[in-house]
Length: 318
Image (spheres, rainbow, N blue to C red):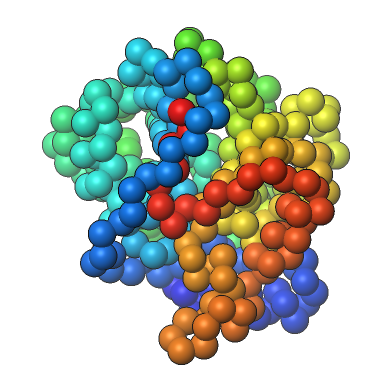
């Protein structure tokens, strides 16, 4: 979704009530940042040689990109960001060893899968070894019904993925991926074709990740309907996590009841500064936009979250 459409959707949501969900998640991909990105914030939280690197975008748009790296150097990726993030991510992963055991994609929005798509277009993935790609995108005919503008991009990506010859796995609710050294991913849900409102966001596959004894909830862009279903259908211990990735970039995603069930001590916002500030852009300034980030901020305060990190710079939990 282009930023002007993102704003229109937010206005519609605000008019329908503060908690009304937005439609699609992806804003317009803008040019690369010209200024130097600030150095990564390192957070001593995991121990034992583990790193979880959460990358801010190379553009100023919403995106999600997270790397789990074991003490021995094994790597697992989640999403990756826009196409403009692809070259950076390729260089970063090669610098850190050049082999990714598994690459998880949460859902079929370009700000989550297109960086991998750019890597797939390179001969032999640009020299990067990828053991498998794990995703469960909505069926193409369903995407054509509910979000036709997304269809060409998703179809192109899936075509490149098929041509790459990489192993593809479909996650299923209850399945656990064990990578050794204290890292595992448990899939919490399947998509639900009855959720036609905000359908692609609500198709986000959530994972409860255990890493170095800590739990992290990967939410993708899960929206209100799927968030409510997870609270309703899962045992409390499946959602309770030490760290939560904020759903749908921290606004118009899951509701307060979802975050109360997760009860995190740390939240990570895959959110650019303008969205955090609810800034319409131009000369308008903070507070001028229709975005719902302030509601989520208040929820986190009310729920007693101890630390929150905004991805205007890279964050590394170590």
